[in-house]
Amino acid sequence: MILLCNNKEAMKRKPGEDGGSKPKGPGAAFLLAQVGAHAASRFAARLTEADLVPANAGIFRILSATPAISQQALATALGTVPSRLVALVDDLEARGLVERRAHETDRRTYALHLTDKGKATMEIISKIAREHRQDLLAALSEEEQATLSGLLQRVAEQQGLLWGVHPGYARIGQSDKT
Image 1 (cartoon, rainbow, N blue to C red):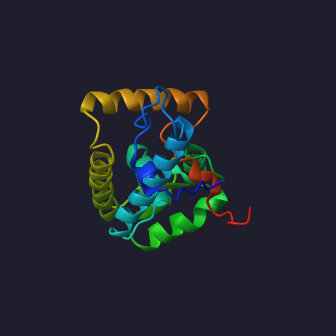
Image 2: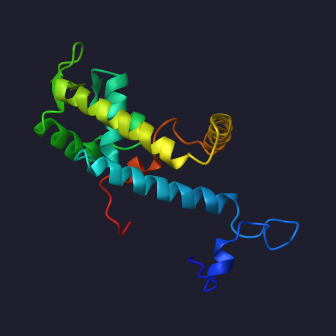
Image 3: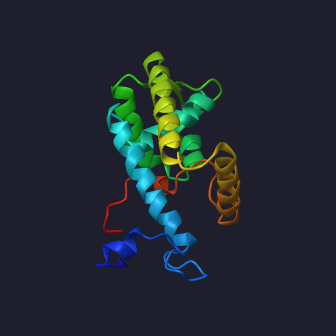
């Protein structure tokens, strides 16, 4: 549902600035969604400068932390099914960023590894993520940022979200009609 307001002055006011004692306007859930959508859009735009998409960032993060992970295990870590990752991994491999090698203990499985070019790309992603965080949270002190992170982590845990995994991975490969 989209709420429209034609009163530009009212939209510029902060909650509670109209003289009322209780803040009026959007609640915490709406603000989380609003800031989350904004943050995701801005991060995606930053990644395009490196010829990447947000799904790539999560894959790189896990591959850098867990070298030789299987595609099955990567899918589990991302909360998606392996078949949905095939095209993404194929693209990264074709670009020389990821390589599939024979698994040390299971000849039926390939282990995924970042190439040297992939490791350099991971450093670029890390720099983009740091700059993104700094820009997004510039209005907060370091202490406030830590408090916000702790509170949001509690909410994420209570909601059963996978630690450090964007819920968008569950939709990889799905059409927009589903």
